[in-house]
Image (cartoon, rainbow, N blue to C red; front, side):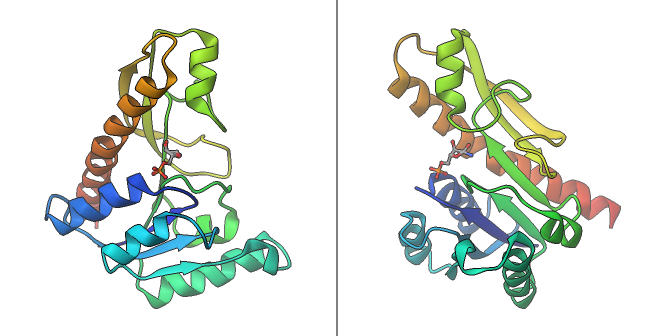
Length: 191
Ligand code: GRF
């Protein structure tokens, strides 16, 4: 299967997925990085992996559907089967959802449905929970909604956001690979 990763920022999850595919730990090929931020650090990572990347500026399009049709055209050119969102800071609309039903997944740094949306780690720390975590889930029109594929708990380090964040990111990189293996294996059985 051919995977496109969508990302807007640093791209450590992009790298974890690309590395797993390169190492054969994930039987898939990362064929494209899509970003909505041309200066995102994730583009440098894609270059290092020699994975083609494409930056689209959503503001250059008349609306979300128009933007997504352009993205979709590129996904089709690359023969993309699956889309993995990794820090992609936009909601996915019907154009992409209809083109990739149950084939778009996302990672979020909380135990959803707790703490959806921005700064989930800050939200968890402010709420004073002892345990937060990571969720990989199927994407629907909502913000961090859609059925969970895998979740893993991560203890909060009280008062230490940096350590909590580092622990969460480490778990993310493992969990994304596991979740991709799971959905790819499941879809191979049903096809
Ligand atoms: C991750 O915490 C991910 O769960 C969230 O955005 C962050 C992206 O980090 N959706 P990175 O760009 O992959 O390093």
